[in-house]
Image (cartoon, rainbow, N blue to C red; front, side, top):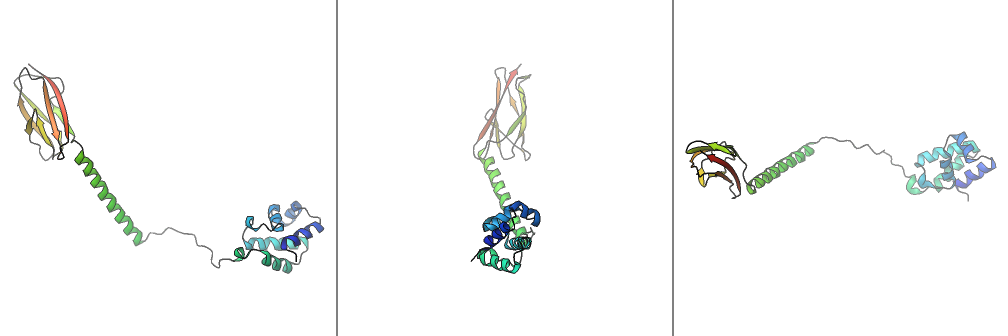
Length: 206
């Protein structure tokens, strides 16, 4: 019992058609025709397309179309003949209430995690502090010096070991006594976790 590949190849040879010649007549690539002759189904398109190829080749070579179609259906692998009655629909993105809920919950969780991370880093880090006065190397005339700057509202500030009040905006200021022997002012900012940041300013008292 001859296969569809053998039927086509025999008819092509009898008609003295090369694969290239048959390609020109049927407008089907010679590689597809050769694959049908060799029954190399895995490299060919779908069954419907192959069925069209076989009909065109049969017409060009004078093969009985009904015989060719019946033989193809017999020889073609069953798992490839099965055709989905409904073509696969293209998956399209659609916004749904469920997606909105999931996205909202995710944003809330990310916001909470971000806030907790920020607070943790803030807790374990020394507070920032900016000293506006005195500047480093400042010459002081008299026996007093105003020290002021900014830090975090919940930070503790000491100037030369003396506590200084910090207002709700994080600003602090105090006036300390100085002598000609005073050469440095030390400002220490402490966080709630006990982390400290120290800034020193060299001064000259005249």
